[in-house]
Image (cartoon, rainbow, N blue to C red):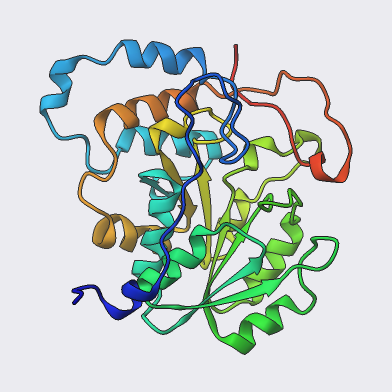
Amino acid sequence: MTFERPNIEKMQGYTPGEQPDDGDSIKLNTNENPYPASPEVAAALRSIEVDSLRRYPPPLADQFRQAAARLHQVSEHNIIPTNGGDELLRLVLTTFVDSGETIAITKPSYSLYRVLADIAGCKLAAIDLQADWSMPENFLAQLQQVQARITILVNPQAPTGSLISVAYLDELAGNYGGVLVVDEAYVDFIDPELGYDSIPLIGRHKNLLILRSLSKGYGLAGLRFGYGIACESLIEPMLTKTRDSYNTDTISQHLATAALDSTGPSILPSIPTEPWTRTVAASRWRH
């Protein structure tokens, strides 16, 4: 006998990457940053007083939203902080897709997407990338054919490392009738010389949501902090209706704000140009 919902009973859960006990391993299985967070984050951690933990955190993480708005030159109303990028993905499904509707991704892609679709009782359309890992031909037509309510693209793509151009995203968002989620968990590793910047697109497309994470480029995987950037009409229902109350804690808000405030130009030398490393660049904080 089981009390699980039928779709939960037959699904497989997400399998996390192995976490070795030692702190010296460079972990490629979960792509954790081998470098520590910025000195400003360390200073912010030391400044936290235990007495501050007896109160609930600011529910909307206002200081972090303001820091993110400054960094990206948008309004704080365009920012939603989340407990890791994974919570933002859950909020997107909870807010914008019904059970039985279709979510589209490319294949291969992040394995959590299928798990979240199963939890929500959604169909998943996984559309194969081309042999050179470029986007599928007639991708928009395929989205329309499967009636995808939400499409999630990883950019730079995981696990291939290939990069979708801003022009491609602009055209796709402008012609797609659903919500386009661009998962930019690895955006901090794009070669700055490529000039990639998708943020201005949120002013052009009300259906575009950009996911950012502090886990990779900022060296803060243990903090579990992410955020979304989109027009206010996408952010508002997640922020005020479907988000968990106090979804980010006092410590994580404080450290995440310090992390964003410590960002600066890349200091590492230029990178190799092999296809699998072309989009990789340096961490962006000051030292």
